[in-house]
Image (cartoon, rainbow, N blue to C red; front, side):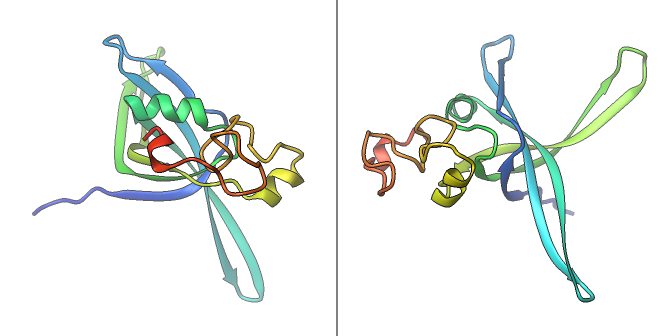
Length: 150
């Protein structure tokens, strides 16, 4: 029997990305993603949030660390992976995480940036979806596809 392991998530970062390097020099960035689900139960509207750890490798890990910040919206395409280890006290531990193959940055909503008191460029300082080339922060960005680092 064949298997299929594919995960696609759309959500917001719950904290700033954390980047480190492996001993052989490969960049690894960890993202903490919140994915919301809204549903109706009887006459009541409900919402539940699922928190998911995402791991990004290589050049894309460096790009995520450089341009993303807490609250940023992303689309993650990857695979589910289980990591196993033994803790310091000898207890066997494991956790599921998504290993990203592609991370797309979602543009910030202007209303959300203004309501939180941030500049329209967002906390990432000119992240894609904001202004990359010094254009009007309220108008469309003035960069081309060649300017996007992924």
